[in-house]
Length: 201
Ligand code: GAR
Image (cartoon, rainbow, N blue to C red; front, side, top):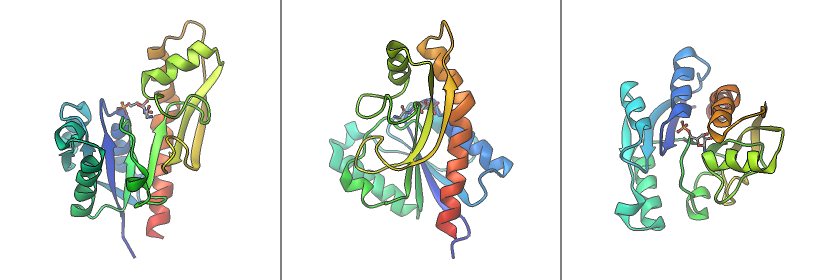
């Protein structure tokens, strides 16, 4: 039996969701898993600094440098295997993974998405664009979703969801902040613990 699931967190940018995971590990919300590796496709991601500050090993795997999706995914798999990773968390990872990759890790990859799936999700819906689309449509409630990752972008089984109110005068930026504070930073660590506990069971 595994003692703790070894987690890799994939990031691309600021890494506030990564920070929520690191904090949750410290506070004991995540107790069945440990963050063993942070992988970024972007060498300049501030998320890498957050990982280093927490003493977590980091790796950069760049699609541009490796020259395409197949080599990129091979680079990711190499890092995962080198580090004996059991479970992958996409936390603001802005690359789409092909079926070739996702089928290697059934129910072992989760993602946080900043809307109530199936609204405002799929190809092209990432980061601020999701909140722009929600405001443009005029929905009064949005939220966040944590789901398993399969070959369909944002199409895997839903693990946790939380609704967040849209307020008069919201901009994509104010809405993004509220969705992170009220939903993402709470849901992602909880889902990480649920899946880790299942893995080490
Ligand atoms: C978060 O809002 C996350 O849900 C979103 O990007 C932001 C990353 O912020 N992810 C997606 O849109 C994926 N489709 P962070 O780097 O501060 O965690």
